[in-house]
Amino acid sequence: MSKVAACSGGLGDIVYAVPVLRQLGVTRLYAKVAYYYPPHGDMCSSLQRLLAQQGIECLPTSGAYPPFEYEPGLTFDYDLDQARKQPWRGRNHIITSYLNQFGLSHDGWTRPWLKVEGEHQFGNYCVVQRTPRWRSRNAVDWRRVFGELQERYDQVIFVGFPEDHREFRREVGAPVDHVACADVLDMALLIRDCRAFYGNQSVGVVLAQGLGKEYWLERNAMKQNVLMGTPNEHILPDPNWPDNQRITRPWQL
Picture (cartoon, rainbow, N blue to C red):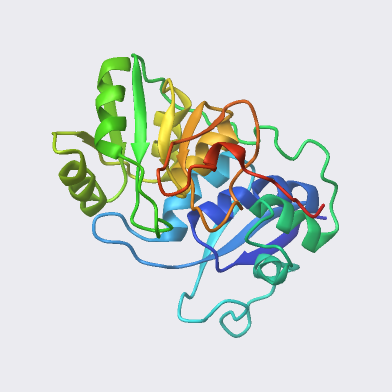
């Protein structure tokens, strides 16, 4: 019998939950409605097409409640928010926190878990998503990184909110192509077919991991809960954190 789950987390948290939901037998997920800047809709609608391709129906529930609380009368079998209570949550990968919470197998947890269908993109291009979140005390020289990307790829595509694109363009001091994605599936298709992804802790890097793409990460120096340690993972150099290339991963499995 199929199960139902609910989650207060953001886009990345929910995409990370997909392999966990499969183990749990969940086919229906309630996601809280968090509205974005127009015309981007809300979090639930942004996820629906991608999750549908993973065999999960995404349904809206009120976003007026804090984590661990949902609108009265909502029924479900699993509350994904409970993984927020896991010890070492900032050091363990988010997927392993979910697995630990629900007592699930860790076998193959770093293997790509997303399959997305849609029209193929062609060309020697990379995708960048850089958000203002999780950047405390970071000093990656994105102007230099962007210059290297221009030499390496025929096109550099920025995905994300318009205000993030404006800030990135200001930081690198050059025009940057911006593709406005209708939802997370559109972004996943761009990342699926790109040569590599570059960004910080955002849904973009979650998609890159889920699709098994080569990616370069501006890591949050205070946490390591998105690090997988796989061969396709690379850390962008940061002068504030010269030991970025020697990250320990004390996962509590």
